[in-house]
Amino acid sequence: MTPIEKNSPLQLLEAVLPHVLFDGWSRKAMIAAAKDLKTDMTVFDLTFPDGAIDMITLFIRNADDRMEAELEARGVRDMKIRDRITLAIRSRLELYGPQKEAVRRAVNILTLPQNAVRATKLTANTVSLMWYATGDTSADFNWYSKRLTLSAVYGATLLFWLDDKSEDHAKTWEFLDRRIENIMQIETAKWKLKKSFKEKPDFSHLPSAKRFFRNLRMR
Image 1 (tube, helix red, strand yellow):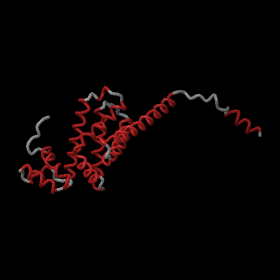
Image 2 (cartoon, one colour; image 1 turned 45 degrees about the horizontal axis):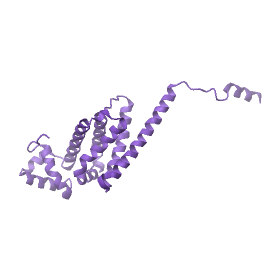
Image 3 (tube, helix red, strand yellow; image 1 turned 45 degrees about the vertical axis):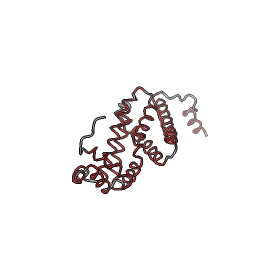
């Protein structure tokens, strides 16, 4: 692992994280981190001018980068599509494991109305990286539909994971498997419907419309 540069945004973030458990994503946590690093608070203010939301943004983007590297290292593109997406979400949450309380507090802040736009962008970036890392090359409407679907699954699984107290988060992975199964069923149905439209429909089993209207005129 590459050493973190002194007073770099990542080093400052790493120093803040232990204090988030007790003080949340707050200025109090930043002050405590500055003392730990024996760094002037001005460094934190310049790095995170918007305070909590800037720290959370870096926290999430750093996890995105780590997830992408993890998926590449595990050869995710050689797997079946279902296994790729399952691994992407699971890896993302496992990276969050040591900072579960920090994630919980971050989610609470991001759900505030004033942070809705930032939260949407961050989630969109995460799921886009998931698809990109797993080999997705779509460029049509599927690009949007895939990301909307994955956003819903990832968001639901994240919330379940936050409240999961089972050993090794076993219940979360069961929940994720069920959500992925639902997606695969939907995608299969979409494929069958699309295929049916491409094929020439067979109406030979239906009553003759011409005969039907002729009978109407005779009555």
